[in-house]
Amino acid sequence: MIFFALVGCSKPHTPSPGPGMGPSGPPEVGVIALHPQTVNLTVELPGRTSAYRIAEVRPQVGGIIQERLFKEGSQVQASQVLYQIDAAPYQAAYESAQAALERARAGLERARLKAERAANLLKARAVSQEDYDDAEAARKEAAAAVAVAEAEVKRARIELDYTRIKAPIGGRIGRSLVTQGALVTANQAQALATIQQLDPIYVDLTQASVELLRLRRALQDGRLQRPAGDQPRVTLILEDGRDYPHPGRLEFAEVSVEPTTASIILRAIIPNPDQVLLPGMFVRARVEEGQRQGVLLVPQRAVQRDRQGRPYVLVLNADDQVEQRLLQTERIQGDAWLVEGGVAAGERLILDGLQRVRPGDQARAIALDATPGASGPAAPSSP
Image (cartoon, rainbow, N blue to C red):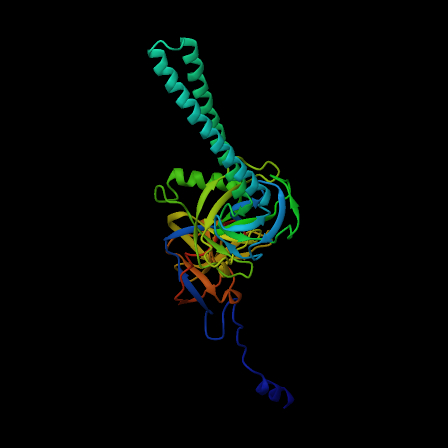
């Protein structure tokens, strides 16, 4: 009786699902089909801002500062008066030069009349040739004296004007380093103030020389296209992570490589109408390199690593079987990797459900409406 009871209570044996198999069949995975794309490649580079123009304000004549005529930190215009130096001694020198000029002109008139009389008397043989020559020489000396006096008046006028110290360029002026009553000298070493033109503004970017060489080779080989004569567009990323709204252009690349860092300086010029950018700010710049056709982009979230740290992805073959593929990556492009090998156009890349399958498993594909991003910054790298 006990034997039959035990037999009656036993349950029939049910085989357990194989690896990767759910209770109702193969697991579902989200896939996207890889298609060649045309992308605009960009690269992010670090940089610092610098003023478009810088001018240090210095006096060109000496004297006592009587007045400061600007507000520190304000915007000034070219030729705007910034300081007034005591002009009294220079005004006196100017008036003295004018008086000397009048005296020289009077002497010239006297010498001219004598020379004319001597010429008439010479015709009448009333004076000798020597007397005429002396009169003519005196006239020329008087004319030269007038020219000297006129030059002295100009010099005195210039020095008088220099007592009004003007802005050499337009821009934002910093703090004043002298106060009213300070004694200044002509062309002194210490600047009175500094003016910086901030619109537009320069951004000096740093790029590894090997990457610049790679870019130039890609352009020469035709793997990368850029319109002839077109300067690359530059978009800044501010310190808070936001894009700066006014894009600029790359101006030039430095002619030599910095030996200690093996890098080269690229200079961009950026509009700065609101003067949000100030000299010395650290920024990142997204620089357009060119357009590349027929590339494959693999979303970053589809990429995994094996024990050796090599990047790989899982694909679903024509038999709905999971395969592992090692990737040959070139760079990051937006939220995707630009790959040179490991996968081919038309293959189904597993994007969702990666944790539910392993290589060799059967899976059921669910097509996703997802396309790897073809925009955004690119950085040469390897995962």
